[in-house]
Length: 122
Image (tube, rainbow, N blue to C red):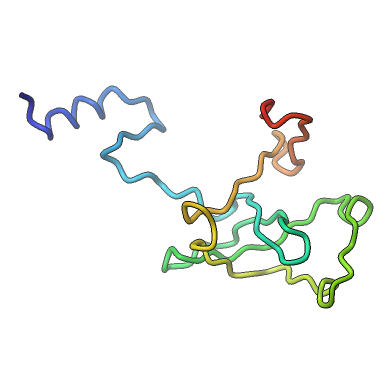
């Protein structure tokens, strides 16, 4: 029978940089500058960038970052209030699965969304 702390130490020493063991607390990906999607009552999901995680770790301040071709490619909502989209918002993480916003898949330029015909190609 092995000592649990000895086992944890041996396991941790075999991990590559950037990996963590089940004994480590996983780091949040909800950090400043992360590109995410947020829910929107008029457009379902819209792209945003995390401006700052709040101290309570239950909310994040985001800035909506619409794609350059938003005007040409988006069918505009005609619902009341949809023309006044708030570009800065405070989002409750508890409204999302695992208390995290979905991350965007971006090209190497860090701006262009990855375009794939099949999600399996991501």
